[in-house]
Every structure is written in C-alpha cells, then in structure tokens.
Amino acid sequence: MHRNRWERQGQAIVMVTVALFAMCGLLGLAVDFGWAFFVKKAAQAAADAAALAAATESLRTVGVNGTYVCGGNVPCSPAQCNATNTNNSDAFGVGCKYALRNGFTSGGKNGRQEVTIVAGTSPPPPTAPGVMSVYYWVTVRATEQIPQLFSSVLGNTLGTVSARATAAVAESVAPGTVYGLNRQYDPTPNSKNIMLGDYKTGKGMDFWLQGGPTVKSNGPVFLASNATIAADAGGSSSVRAPFTDIRGGLSLSGSSSWVQTPSTGVSDGENFYDPFEGKGQPPAPTITPILGTNVWPINGGSGATTPGLINGGTNCTTRKVLFPGFYYVQNPINGAATGAQMRIEGCVEFRGSTNFDDFVFFGGLSFGQGANVLFAPGRYVLAGATNSYPVLEVQNGTWLTDHTAAGVRNTDAGEIFILTDMNYLGTNQIPSAVASSNLNFAFGSTSIKTGEASNKNLINLHGLNDENGALPQGLKPFSPVVIWQDQRNSTVKHNSDGTIDTSCGDIDHPCLTGLSGDPDSARQLDINANVNVQLYGAVYQPRGAWVQIWAGSNESGPLQIVSGAYVVHSNGLLNLLGLPNPITTLGVVLVE
Image (cartoon, rainbow, N blue to C red; front, side, top):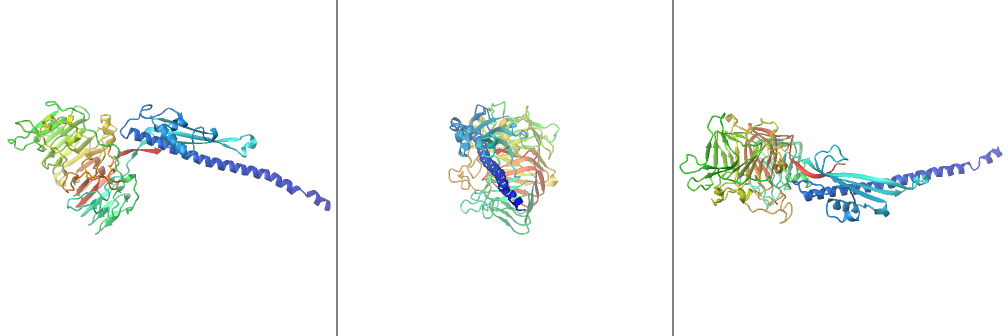
C-alpha cells in the first residue's frame, strides 16, 4: 500500500499542466473573438456613417427634383478612402471624412486598414436587391487586419475583420393622412375671428372642432404646434385615427372624444414638417401666349347679360369645349383685361389635343349652380383675382368631374389646380392684354360649396399620377396633389425650395410675409363637404395657411390633407380613406 501511494504522486501536476494549455488556448480564443467583435463594431459604425454621409451629401447637391448623373453631379466609380479622397468635397470625400472620424481609412493602423466606396444610380443596389425605389446608392466596405493570439499557434498571426453598409437616396411614404404644420406662433385666424395662432401670445392651435363633426382618418394625424392647447375638440365632436402625435396639448370639452388617445408633448421630428419641403412648387406651364392661338378673351362689356359668362347649354352630349391656353375677361372696346371673374354654367368640357394640357385663368373662376363640367388631365392655374373675387369658387349644385370613376385610382395623368397669383407665371407667360391692364391679379379666397345631398351634385377629381408617362417630369414630385395653394400665399415666409425661412429666428419663430391676418383673406380654403364630394389625392396648403371644413353630411374619399391648421364645424362625417399612391418624400436611408 505504501508503494502504490508513492507511485501515484505527481499525477495532479501533469493534469494541471495539460489543463493550463487548454485554458490558455481558450483564453486566447476568447481574446481573439472579443477583440474581433469590438473592431467589427467599430468598422460597422464607420461604414454606416460614411455611407449615410455620402448619400446625404449627394441629396444636398442634386436636390429633391434633380437627376443623378454618374460622373456628372455624383461620383460612382470605385475608390478608396485614402488621403486624396478624404480631401475631396464631393459625396465620396464627405463619406470618407466620416469614415476617418470613426477611426477607419485606407492605410490606417500601419497599413492594416482599407476603406472602399462605390456608388450607382441604377436600382436596385447590388447589396440590397429588393430595394427598387432608389435614385442613388452608396456602398462602403471597411476592413482591418488584427493580431491573433490563439490562432497564431497554428500560424495565423493576423485575422481580417470587415463591415459593409449601403445607404440610398430613396422614396419613402409620408405616413400622415392629416398634417397640421402651423406652430405655436403662426397667426392663423378662423371664421369667427378667434386667433388660433397668435405670434404675440403664443396660443397657436392646429385643430379646432366645434359642433358635432366626426373626423375619421385612415392614417396618423400629426400636429406641429407645441402650444398649451394645440388641438381643441368641443361639443359632441370626435376624431378617430390610428394614432395622433401632438407637440403641444389637447383639450376635450362637452361630450367630445378623441378615439385612440393622442400622444401629447411629442418631441419635434420629421413628421411635423411639410412632406413637400425641399421640392419647391409645381412648375408653371412653359407656353408663350399668342393671341388667337392660345389666348381666349371672354366678352366682358357692359352690354353683356353676365360679363365673363361661358354657358355651355343644357345638352351635355355636345358640350362646349374650352381649349388649353390663357383665359381672361376683356373690355370689348380696348381689348384689355377687366379683372372680372369668369363664370361657367351649363355643359362645358376642358379638353386639349394631348394627354396633359395647361389652362390658365386670370380674374378668378366661378362654377355656377347647375354647371356640369368635365376636366381632361391637366394643369389648371388660377392666376389671381381682383376686386375681392374668389380665385376659385364652386357654388352649390355643380357637377365637376373627370374621366375616372369616383373612388377609383386614375390611370391617366390626373389634374392639379394651382391657387396662386399672376406672378407665379413669370412676365413672359402673361398675355399682353393682362399685362397692359395694369391690374394686380393677386391671391384670392377659395370657396368650394357642394350643397345639400338632395341637389345630387358631384365633385369627382383625381390628383396627379406620377406613373403615367404623359405627366410632365417637373410635376412628378407633386403626385398625388389635386389642389395646391401657393406657398407665397401664407403668413409664414417660405424659401424658393419650399423650406421655411428661418433667417429671422428659428423653425418656431420664422420670418413672416407681413400679410394680413384677416379671417376672410386668401390664406383660407373653405370647403363645404357633402356626401357627393370625391377628391382623390392630396390637398395642399403651406404652413401659415388654414382650411375651414363644414362637414354637413358624409364626405368620404381617398385623401391626404396638408395644411397649416384646421377648423371643422357642424355635424356629419369627414372620412379620409387611405391612398394607394400617397405623398412620397425623398430621404436618405440605410438599406443594408
């Protein structure tokens, strides 16, 4: 027994020694993996930052309405982020700077790092084959060789860690169905002369419901004001939306309700900004007015029964055709424009010889009771009014329709009605009879009255369709707008690209245009909604304007509304259904 005990001595030392080899190997392996994981996270951060920065710089350079051209306004050829590229000011140079700030550049870490960058304009990006709505993509690869501990026993002294990221300038859907753009200091009065937005007291309100209206929104509601009461629902009114985000507060009184309790005090973000920001405005038509060819003066003499009247009669099988061009009411003595409003009654059709035509009206356009008007796809520019005429007036009992059935998405190019003044066109676009009249065709109010359901009236109009080849390229970014109010017709000053002028302060305290806060001014869009109203598309007003809706019955349609503020009266249902082709915005996103 004594001998066997001595024979077993020393075995533990051998076992521990063998175990130490395994333990050291595992420790080395853990260090290798841990260090590789750390470096890979750093490489991924560098690749993400570089790709996003490069794509963002390309969007800033080209703009939302520009065309991306490889080798022209954007770089595409494969390159390394070395000292030369990092000093460049193009998209690649900006991207390489961001990679360097995150610790990666070609030749870095004693030659163990490499950063490559490549881009293109043809969708999809090779690294994201499912992403098709792309205008420009940038892919960045960042690699680094790192020393090995455990693997070095096997002769592998260096390991390679890599990361890849792709960012793209791509279209994204504007998620909101209702946008209230006004902020707490924007002056936006309503019809009862109550200041919904007072830049002196800061009592800005984006949403005001009185009576018993019900507003149903298929999509989210976003209200940008951070006033104490940014939304106020009184009476028996109710709002139904999947969710509502409000920068400010909400007040409910009476038996009013807001189904799905809104989130109040929400931090500022992109959902509170104009979804058309950066796109500028829909371009004016580029046609030179030639008298007798595309200028149509309407008799406005004192002997006329109704100056400026166009009556198409009662036989709608043979409508009176109004051709593309410029319209105004003229003085038959000297031929000058009188500034009077043009009034349409009876069976009339706007029609041209192409699949998308341009119509321009000076002095305001009114559709009288009983008018039955058919619109061809086109751009309808309401270029100002005089003598307090509305720039657009739709009276009770009218039929305004196009060639697509109500509630159905149009396959043609669609229509857009631009509410503006004569300056929108540029001097070379104004007929001599209008220019020589020395009249100021300025912004006018808009009143759409659709009457009672018993009148059997119908408004059925469809907005722009960017999938139709006949739509001019310059109008494609404004799909699916059906009504557009000039951004200059606002209390808030806008830059030419559609952004807010903040040179006077900041986004909450922007520059003002100095226009009056009169509640009957042109900044207000007045809609009397009715069961037979079908606007398919988007209605747009800029921040600093507002819409007043009298929901007297059940109005339902696939519609998005962008406006500064909303005043909703009376009873009835305003039902905003979802659009299969909603407003889209251009932005930069990581797609891989």
